[in-house]
Amino acid sequence: MEEVLFESEQRQSRSETAQMLRSVADKLEAGESVSLSAGEQSITLAVPETHTFEVKAERETGGGESELSVEFELEWDENGSDSGSDGSLEIA
Image 1 (cartoon, rainbow, N blue to C red):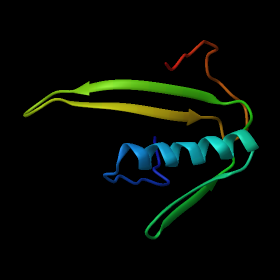
Image 2 (image 1 turned 120 degrees about the vertical axis):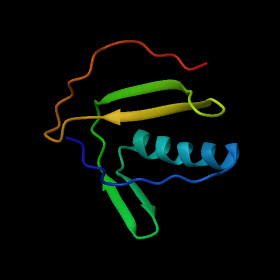
Image 3 (image 1 turned 60 degrees about the horizontal axis):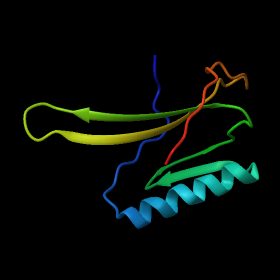
Image 4 (image 1 turned 90 degrees about the vertical axis):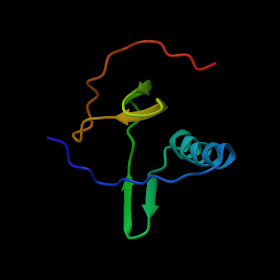
């Protein structure tokens, strides 16, 4: 079962998205918690040193034009253990 703790979706420029991703990356690198807020919603997450990082590119097809997406996901067990697989990822 999945419980959504926070969700936000908004149109923005590539520059705005890059700035938001840089902010998250800086907090991760510094070992700081990541706070998310939009309207009445907010959550603060302490990302552990070791976690699973998933990158997924998808094409969604259906009734109209196809839609492309890239998803970045950080995942860890609430008890702090990491159950992900080891591997190598390169972003070029």
